[in-house]
Image (cartoon, rainbow, N blue to C red; front, side):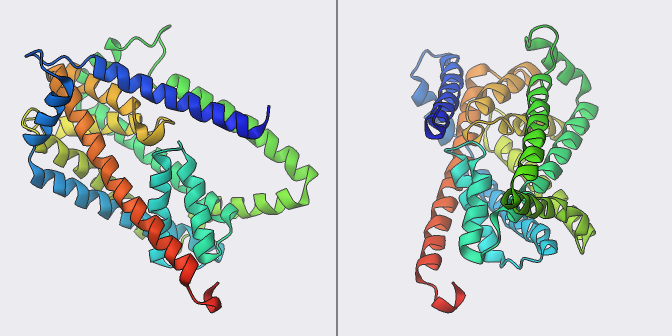
Length: 333
């Protein structure tokens, strides 16, 4: 099969899954008054506290600013000096691409950084993988903490969902990830033996991947990671408080919903669309007895608001990057 056709089919498949999940979520939205679904969601937006939604935008951008600096710290041990502004622009472009192509943002941000700073793509991509591994660790810690504070509710929620044959929520995805890693490792070893060029690329990737062990200030890196995930939590907390229907939820409930939302966003779908709209309403309904229409409306508005923030920041970053690459002086090219 031609690579472009294969990529097109994969992308179409992902889009169909996303559209299907969104359709199922909207299908289950049945306002109590029998009114229009769009009107119901619009009214939920009108009744929201815009001050808290503004705080969501602030926390979102602060987390991305810190993430850009943390990425710079990972790249530094590889011998490549990256300016903070270029790191931030590339990161935001990556988020923008992720909204259209699942996981495509990781490659696009590395390519944009190469265009701006001439940082080898394989090196920066290795640091992105290391960064993702750290985020997965943070996610597991978050899930563990949420189980500690909300054990009874979460176990009830998990038993409510039918995964078939007693499978857990994380079993199938992580089994697939493990299989992909094994196959990829075998392929990489084969290519290294056959290709000198591939060996050079692999060495650059490995250098970026191992950069986390060569950090000059590991304490500051850990602090940045903690603050980034704290800001993610504050984004969820501010969103919960922005809507009258959810504002009564306490901190432990917000922590649990934050964990569920993080798991949903980790799904290989554009910006977590679909998975987020499926899992989070279930949590709100089964864990905290929120009426289903209110839960669905909340999730649609919350996710849409975050998406708008990323689109605006990403488009601006794309334009600025283009202007820098197009118009900068010959000496810096």
